Image (cartoon, rainbow over all chains, first blue to last red; front, side):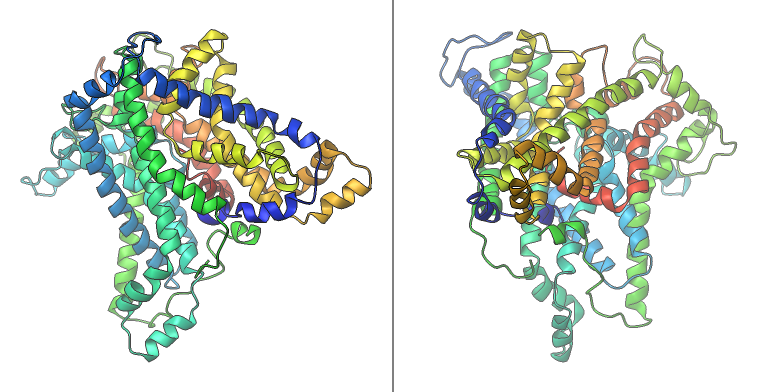
Length: 310
Length: 301
């Protein structure tokens, strides 16, 4: 769905644009151009430049080579932030994809009350990460939350105090993140499923293909464009994770849920080490650009070619 | 393409026709209901906790219905919950959020509609470059742009002011909104523009009198999307709004995660619920429109 809403490649645009010329369009595009150049390109250049200076409390223009980067990668907190993010993203992406796919397939079986289920799976998308984080924090409260329910039900040995367990706290973040994101995966894949020719299933049935193999070997490959979009959106959402951490754990216990975005914010505004923060931001920029630039190019700027199921 | 984007999830199920009864069918519904409970759980817990008293919360089960439902926690959350030494409730943040919301919805949408129109029908050198920058920018974590923007805003006196936070929402709302409007306008026949030109309408007149009336559906989607994302914003509000304009999400987090005093979970959940009310109301009232909005806005957040 996001895919469809965002489709319409530039090729379509070009066909029309060649036909109309008007000087006014340059004036019209001026505000957007200023924003693109100053607020996006300009800030990025400035951020990258600061990362190569010895700036501390305020930015200074003293070139310092890769000093900030050496400090950054020597910092245990940054290393932990990166490994936490890697762990969070991999589980978050896999679980959201699997759950979203299962929900989409389940909803595509001509079920009753499909609309009600869809509404239920999608409403978390409209919530603030702060709200999501605070509610899950309360549900996972180590004394009054789920843990207490388990004890009341007679499972005294079950440990559900994950949010204060350094090894498991990040899974609570994953749970909240997945709760919020898998509805969107469901919606994307459901739109894809609805584009598949029903005849395929009839043909598969004639061949005696069982249902699970039909979905695994025939449907899944057809959903590839939607799966790619979903994976990229989830990856970007994963890398950006910040508010959820602030609301739920504030990085703790210890450094168990520290993430790079929070690291940057801390060194910018609390620990006043701008150069270090900007080197961390640059690392994040390079990582995300490696995913985004090819995606945006393929999605919007490449000449469209006919695709299955689209 | 515009056809596809108006029908979020296709016409009807295409999956295999179900066997009328059977274990598979029962398993399917067990899975769906189970998943439904998982998704409904936080909303349920939030509501029932906010209706309980603290004594009941201390001894009771988090999933149990309140024995004597009361709105005391709601009124305390609204008017007297504390963040540090301030005890004015989340109402302050609520009104701040409203003041931020209105201009932060109108301004970016007006600019995005205008830019989307310019990008759809007219030829301009460099237009693709601008569009490409905005698209890539929409995906980059905000922390990459934040600090230079703080410096720039401080130097012109916009940092920590209401116009400042509105400008930030305009800048970061622009890419995805422009994309939505551009894709919508490209789906319209170019003959509309040509005919209007023959009738003597100029560039701006075509936009105002021909395009805007046709764009009402996409404006509705854009308003829903932008309003939800501005209301739910935490990061920009925390950095740019300044102490007098802190939005509700920031205040909520301060109330709940404040380390002072005993935790009042019912008040916390009432405050959380009040913050979630606006997006929830929009979602349940607008349904399909909302789905299209979040789908288009999926790259944000």
